[in-house]
Amino acid sequence: MVKFKTVRGMRDLLPDEARAMRYVEGVARDLAESYGYEEVITPVVESYELLSAKVGEEIRKRMYAFIDLGRRKVALRPEFTASIARLVVATLRNKPKPLRLFCIGSLYRYDEPQLGRYREFWQSNYELIGSKEPEADMEVLALTDELLRRLRIRGYQFKVGHVGILRGILEQEGIKEVEQNYVMQLLDKKDYVKALEFVKSLGVSERCVEALKGAFEARGDRPLDALKPFKALLKGYDAALLALDNLMDVLNLASESGLKLNVFVEAGFARGLEYYTGMIFEPFVPELNVALGGGGRYDRLIELFGGEPTPAVGVAHGIDRIVLAMRKQGILPMVKERLSVAVVPIDEGLKALAFKVASALREAGARVEVEILGRSVSRALQDADRRGLVYAVLIAPDELRSGEVVLRDMRKREQRTVKLEDLTKEVGLA
Ligand code: AMP
Image (cartoon, rainbow, N blue to C red; front, side):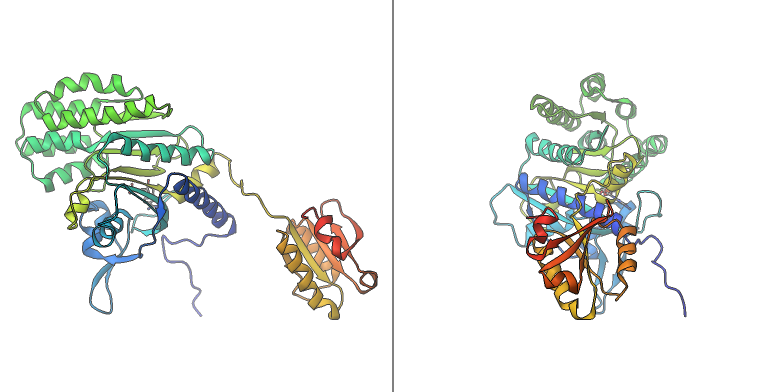
């Protein structure tokens, strides 16, 4: 018989990992509530055409795409935003704006498996639809900051840029969108040299080359200082100048509102997804060289999918990578465990009572495991001890005659008889 393994790049998440993932999920969900984002659940399988339209070449070629039995070309979602844009166009178009939508779930990309890069991974995703104002951009930055803060992650920094700067320059030089996309892909991979060579091969002006070089150098953790000298190089590139001002507006608003964002600004920053039109960002921690999330403004996607022109901004947080960062920082596990209790009936006739006792303890909030292997008391206790349970309740005929059970404190290795009716109080739950 063949021994089955998980498919390459796919993982089983064992209890420790699953608990950590669900913990982050819980915090992300709570955050959505406190910012007024309502949850929607969209399908994992969507039409290939929808998912591939604006996702960018890098992700497009890594999609799990296939023909279904009805001969439709479909794919497993590699990200959430296309689904949300579809939903807004098809179903939510008459809802008053702004719309704040939250979703959480698994995504699929045929990436090369490595630390922090899996073929199935999880995101919590927030979309703010209907505002073109800097306060909307700031909101998604702020909620990302708050998520990382609530999780007690240390030393994170936001890499921030604006797609409109580079696209503005290229657009004004008459460079077509597909070629712009190629430049953005090269920049996403930090291949500045190749990007410049390619742009030169298209016959752009010398001024354009200088502006692009300036953009690649305009970076630093003091946004104003990094961007000010660069502004002079953008003279005459009106759209790029507007983009730069917009980026400054977002960052100023953030700092004036008291949000102490640790920002590293990069005018030449690009992200793989093609639908971005404005501010983009990614949070990083020093312990990992991959981003914990990614976000940005996409003002034309909804229109492209047949809706009214609708500005929007969103962010996705990579739950797997957040857990990885927390593990590296030694802040896992931080999940409050329930009080754990083993219930062991000592003779055959007491099995049913064991379930009743277990129910009462569970109702009071304990995690209860009933002995179901028919083991001797000493074996059952040995196992409870090995697995770190806090109490064992032994149900024995002698004690039961006076309405009592034996309560054993597994850590102190002490036991005493207690009244059955007082059990939840005796373990500290009532
Ligand atoms: P992206 O839209 O590609 O920037 O992805 C947003 C976030 O999702 C990233 O910053 C990661 O945290 C997470 N992510 C993307 N791809 C993967 C992957 N292959 N494995 C794990 N997490 C991923």
